[in-house]
Image (cartoon, rainbow, N blue to C red; front, side, top):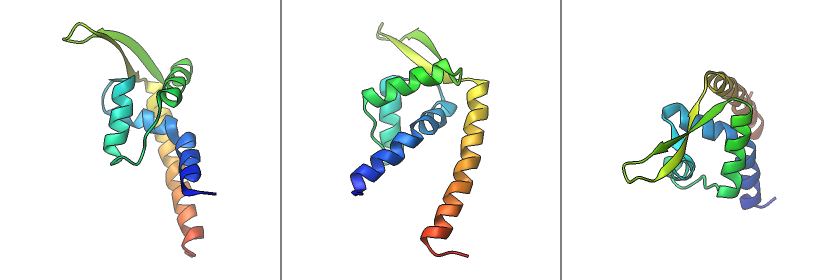
Length: 113
C-alpha cells in the first residue's frame, strides 16, 4: 500500500476523534475546523469539505456535537459546532482506545516485548 493511500485510510478512520478533539478546545465552524486541523498537525492532516461536513452531520445526529448559527462581527452567519457532554465521554473513550492501540502497534512494529 502506498504511503498516501495508507495515510488517507488512517485519517478516514480517525476523522471523528480529530474533530471532537478540536471542538473540545472551543466551538468552531466548518472551515475553521479544516484550518485548525491542518495548522495544529503542521500540515499533516488535511481534510476536504466532502469529508468534514458528512462527519459533522453524523456527529450531530449522534448528539456528540451540536450546531448553532451565530453572526460574526462582519455580519456573516456561520454554524458553530460545540462538543456535548456525550461527545466529551466519547472522546475520552476514543483516547483510551487509541492509547491501547498505539501501544500494541508499537510493540508489534518495533519488535517490543
